[in-house]
Image (cartoon, rainbow, N blue to C red; front, top):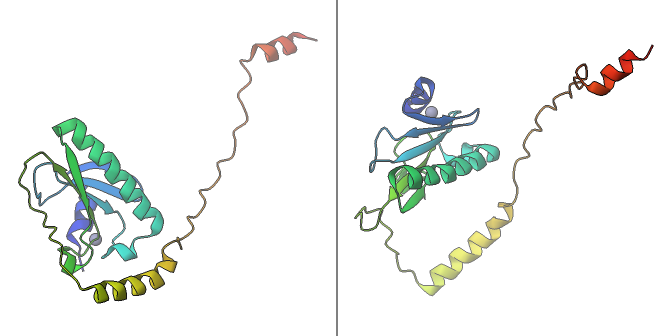
Amino acid sequence: MTCVFCELVQKRANALYEDDKVFVMLSPEPFVQGHVIVLPKHHSPILETVPDAVVADMFKAANKVSTVLFESVGAQGTNVLIQNGPPAGQQHNHAMLHVVPRFENDKLQLGWNPKPASDEDLAKAELLIKEQSKSVGVFEKEKPKPVEQEKPKEIKDDWRVKHLRRIP
Ligand SMILES: [Zn+2]
């Protein structure tokens, strides 16, 4: 099965930034000009399948992208958005994070219409969510980076050594 976004990552299409975990590109389906997406490089169909360390780097990259949009196209705000799962509007089988530049009175409709709920339903949901929230702080441990062996210091041009060498 091929994934459109894995292919785009491979082609480095519309690339703005990449490292070993994260790929940042101008959206091939922009919601508005300047719409940027941040993808895990490794194919991950939904956010839950993205390793914690990569999620962290995606958010860090998105935060930098916001600054880029402020500085480059004069955005006055950004929406940082994840459509996690089809009911949330996810359209592609590859997790991604959207950074959408916003301007005063830009009339973009991202839709945030609160849905009323009864006190009973709210209390029930609160109970269920609180119970499950115990797992929120359980993060995968990142593998420690291989420690680079410290190179011996180059001392041949050190005047102190030259001085020493002159001593018979
Ligand atoms: Zn993919």
